[in-house]
Length: 77
Image: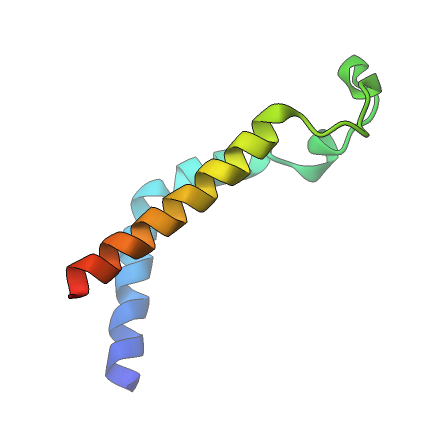
């Protein structure tokens, strides 16, 4: 078990190194202070109404998961 976890750790570190700069830049852009800032003019929109695209996203994700499960089930038979 130790061999597998050590090998997996080395693999993850090796896979992480090429995109490390990109992830650090992304972390700088996605600071929570910027995301949660309410001083933006667009913040005054009606936040009580859930937009249609949210429902479409949830439904399409559910369909994708169901289709993936069915494909795995059919492939295993």
